[in-house]
Length: 210
Image 1 (tube, rainbow, N blue to C red):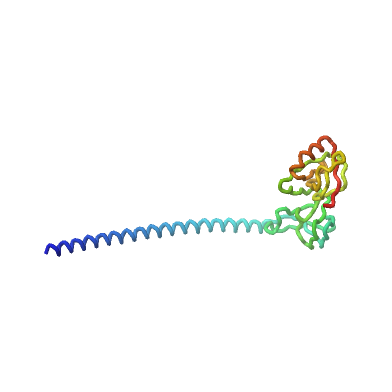
Image 2: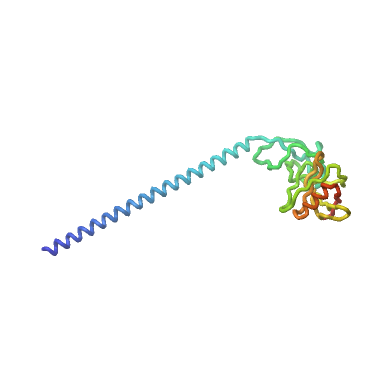
């Protein structure tokens, strides 16, 4: 009788331990499920907010009109821009390039052939008002305002001469400003020499075929 009582007690103890373990497992699963639900809800909320912001931004861009310059006919590469071959139109901001122009820059010409009704941008034209992006590691050096130079445009390749010696070969015309003169882009290691020659006035440039 004592053995039966001990057996039943052991069975009862194991059963209680099993029930406690089962309850703990269910509680852990519920906590994990709750964490998962909250995490998914946060992700969905953030994504919904981002999509809503993007949609509102695009809606504003499509509803906002911007005045831009477009070609009235097909233009060949190097053709000067004028009132005869361009005109202004209002287009949705969403389809306009970041560097689109609304007016004809000074001495502007096309870099490449342009189809009729193409919105014009700084990347499609060359002009005295345009500014060349300096290659990596290059420096911009301003030339004297009164320096006599050959006719050049932004993007032209030139050689820089000081005392009959070429001190910078393959420099680029980076900017032309009627009031400030010409700014050249030169490799960084040649910038000090060119700047010194420009400062003392012993400098000249010649067009290069490079």
